[in-house]
Image 1: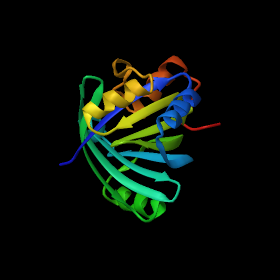
Image 2 (image 1 turned 60 degrees about the vertical axis):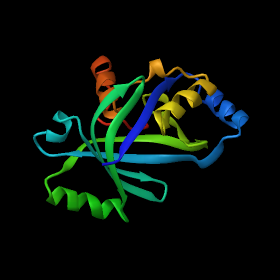
Image 3 (image 1 turned 180 degrees about the vertical axis):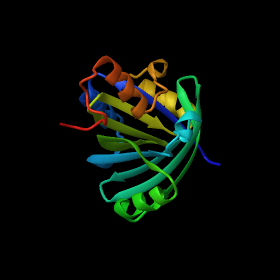
Length: 182
C-alpha cells in the first residue's frame, strides 16, 4: 500500500511563506481554491478509533475519495498508508458510502493553494482555525524544503484538521461543530 509522507506546520505569516516560494522559483500548481472535506465513519467510529481516515474531498473541479491508515511520526514527518482515487460527483458518492454504513462525522473547509518545489508538494492552507503549510514528498526532501522556507519540522503537528478543530472547540465551546468559514 502506498505511503504518504507529510509535515503539517502552523504558520503565523502565510504571505511570507508564499514570497519565499516565489523567491525559490517554485511552480504554482493551483491558485487559492476553496476546498470542502467530508470525513466519514461508521456509527461506532471504528475508523477514528483505529487511527484511520475516510475522506471525500472537493477541491475546485477535483473530487477525491481517500483512505488513510494509522500514522506515525518520524522526525516531524507523519507517515501513513494512503489510498486515493478520483470520483466524478461528491453528491452521488456520499449516498453510496451511506449505503455502506458510512456517515459524515465531520465537515471542514479551507482555502488551499498548491506549489511544487522539486519533488515536494507545498500546500498553503488558510482555515477557520488558522494557517498551515503542508509539505508532502520524501522525508529527506521535506526537511530541505522546510529549511528553505524558514520552517522547522520540529513544529510539525501530527493531528488531523478534525482533531485540531476538536481541541479548539474544547477551548472555545461556542465554536461550531464543523470547521467552516463564517
